[in-house]
Structure formats: structure tokens, C-alpha cells
Length: 626
Image (cartoon, rainbow, N blue to C red; front, top):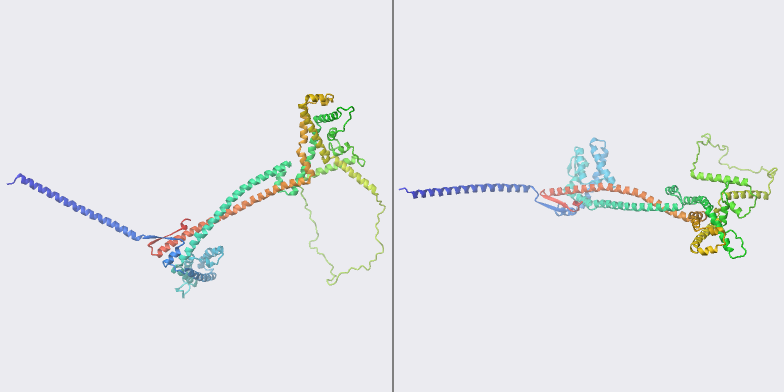
């Protein structure tokens, strides 16, 4: 009988069976997915392995200076590579001679044009620059290029066997053999590495050192230029100050600087300043003729006379102590063309006598001549004289004119002068006619009179202060008068009562003069005594050593200015040459750097290829730091 419990048990068994089947299905699916995933991973690994098999296994680092040693250790390059290179150069010399001879023979042919251009542009120009033979310029790359050109030009020419090479011209066989030596024994590695080391270690640093040195020199030139410009400005300033002290005009100073005047020109310019003395003399005389100076002159004379006779029963008149001032005050303006207060009037004032009687008309004539000559001289100095030769030419007559010497005189005979036929019968006589020789006394008196008139005319045109002794006397009197005025000012301030008592019986002028008047007079006397320009010009006029010292001072300044200017001019040329050198060296250095880099790349690829292509070569060192 079927019961409910049995039915439940059957249902539970069916459920458990279904669950187990589902679990088994899931497990199978998971196993299939994992296998598929493992297959994909394996395929990726295989792909990576294949990619790695096509790339370099590792990298070999070689220092650029150790390339040859590295190649020798791996038997790529033999140890006697230097000897082999020298033998190769000998073959190259022979091949170059054959190349040149053949090129000369076939110069006009079309196929030879490229070889001719190659020789002219790549070989001969470089050889001329380096000053070496043509074959010495060749390297591996030029050999390879020449060989390719010769193969195109001479491939169908020639026959026979040379160095194991069949066909082609003799020069082609020679250059092919040289190229074969380069490649078979690895000599091109040695040659290229040598060139690279030479450029990286020596040539490029040398060029950069030269550029740096030139730049340093340029900087030093800039500093020198600045210092020299300052020194030039300072020296010019000092020179102009010295010239201004001598009152030389600015225009003349600029001319002296521009023309770089010599000592003679400087001395002439300094002595020309003495022309100003005449103006200064007139200024001094004008100051002396003022009412204040007249008053102090009278005051001084009365004061000295009063003090000298003070307390004496009998008074006597003293000689005037201010003779120059007295002379100036007594002189009037001249109407005969002579100078006011001239030297002639001074001599007359001092009662000096002349040996001859003065002819006023003759004196005036000489004065006019002297004034005219002075004007001409001044005008000549202002205008630069020019020599005009005109357009007239000297006519020498016929251009074909020849001097005809006596054709009858033979060269073998000597000319003889005979004096036998000349008879001296009479002595030569000079007939002077009725001319009478004047007596010596008459001639001398006439000459003396003319000279005396000239001297008088000269003195009338010359200020009396131009005489050294008179000028010294004048300055002494002015200094004396100035000191007297200053002393009287002090006395008026300190001892008024004593002064009034002392000068109670003095002349009216002494009693009535005031302190303010004395101060006003002292200002004039100070101007007369403090004229340094007069003293300077007097020294220039009278002292040769003083002029020499001034000339020496100015010439030293001019020499320094000239030297500094020449130095600055030289700096311009020097700077230009240095800049040209720097601009010229920079492209050379850059070119060598590029060539060294090309050598580096070539060697890296060539060595890697020599090793089978599965090694990466890295050449390191200073070559990577350029």
C-alpha cells in the first residue's frame, strides 16, 4: 500500500539527485573556462617570447677611448693595426697618383666630370686648407664614395687580374683593393675611432678654449675701454682747465686738441696771450684815474708830509713817493695816435734827455708804419694763407729740342785751353765818375737820428707799464697805498679820540675823510693789487723758464690724450677681429661636434652588425657631454 511518507521520501531523493547533477554541470563549465583562459595566457607568453627573440638581448657599453682595445680583445681588430694602416696609406698614395694621371687624360670626357668635381671640391680644397698631400685627406668614407664613382665611370673599362679583382680600370681596382683592406681587417674601425678621439679630446675643446679666451679678452677690452674713456675725459678736462687759466679761448683749445699741437704751437699760443697786456694796462690806468684814487693820492701825500713835519719848527716839502700814480693822474688823452701814458711820456716826465732833436713828423710817419704792420700781422694770423700758382705754365719751346754738342770734337781728343796768346797789357780800372763818398760822421749821425726816431715812435705806441722796472715800481706803489688805506681804516676804528687830537692841525682833507670813503677806496686798491692775470702775463713775457714749464705741462696732457685716443681707436679694430674669430670658430666647433656624433652612430651600428645584430652598442664618455 502506498503511503504518504514513502511519497515524501521519493520526492526528497529526486530533489537531491537534481542538485547533484547541477553541481557536476557547473564544475565541468568552470574547468572548460579555466582551460580556455590558460590557453590565451600561453598564447600571450608565446607572443612576448617571439617579440623578445627579435629584440636585443643586452646592451654593451664602451668608453669612446677604449673602442680599439675592446675590438682587439674580441679579435675584430688586430694588434698591428697601426702598421696595416701605414701600408694602406702607401697603397692609397699609389692609387691617388694613378687617379690624378687618369683624370688628366680623360678630363674632357663626360663620364669623368663627377670624378673631377669630387677631386676639386672634396680633396684638393681640403688638402690646401690642411696643407697636406691629396692622398692624406682620404679616409674610409671618401674612399667608399670615390669607389662608387669609379664603378660608374670605369666599370666597362680594362681587363685582367689585379689584387684578385677582375674587370674595370687599373685605378678602380686599386681603390677597390684599398676599400677591401679597410673592411676585411676592420681598419676603418681604428681610423674612425682615432678621428673621433682626436676631435672629442683635443680639437673641439681647443676650439672652445680659444672662443672662451677671445670672449675673456673682449670683456677685458670693454673694461679697458671704460677706464681709458674716463682717463681721456679727465685728461681733457685738466688740459682745458690749464688752458682756461691762461685765458686761451675755447676755439683755440679745440684746435689744439684736434691738431695734437706740438711744443712750438703751444709756446706760440701761450706767448700770444701777452697781447692782452695792453688791455690790462688800460684798465689799471682807468682805475687810477678815478676820483677816489685822486683823493687818496692827495690824502697820502698830505698825510706823509704832515707826519714828517709834525713837531718841527720848519716844515719842508717831501718828494712825491707815488711817482707812477702822479704820472698817470697828470696825463691826458692823446690826439696824435700815441698811447695814453706811454713810455716816451714817462721818460719826459722823469726829465730824461734824448741825444737828437725830435722830428715829430718823422716820428708820426714811423708810428703809422708800425700800426699798419701790426694790423697786417694780425690779419695774416686770422686768415690762413693760400699759395696761388695761377694757370701759367713755363714754355720750354720745342719738345723735341736737343742739345747739339760739337760734332767735330772727337772723344779721343782732350780739350785744351791755351792762354799763350792772351797778353795782359793793362790792369783793370773801375771808373766811379764824379761820385763823392760821404763822411763817416754824416752817415752815422743820419742813421742814429732815424734809429732814435723809430725808438721814440715805438715808445709812443707802448704803455709805460710794459717796461719791467716801471711795472714793478707801479705795483710797489699800489701795494703801499693799499696797505696805508687798510691801516688808516683800523686806526679810525680803534683810536678815534687820539686820532682827532693828533690831526687837529692837519690839512682839511686829512681831518674830513671818513671811514666809509676809505673802505670805498680800499676796494679799488684791492683790484689794483689782486690782478693775478697781470702777474701771469708778465711772467710769460719775461721768464723763458716759466713759459717752458707751461708748455711742458700742456704737452704732457696732450701726449696722454693722443695716446689714449690711439688706444681707443686700436680697441675698435681689435674688438672687430676678435668677434670675427669667434664667429668663425663657432661653426667649425659645431661642425666637428656633428662629425663626431656621426662617427659615434656609425661605430655603434657597425660594431653591432659585426656582432651579429643581437647586441646594442652604447659608446659613452665626454662625447655625450658636448
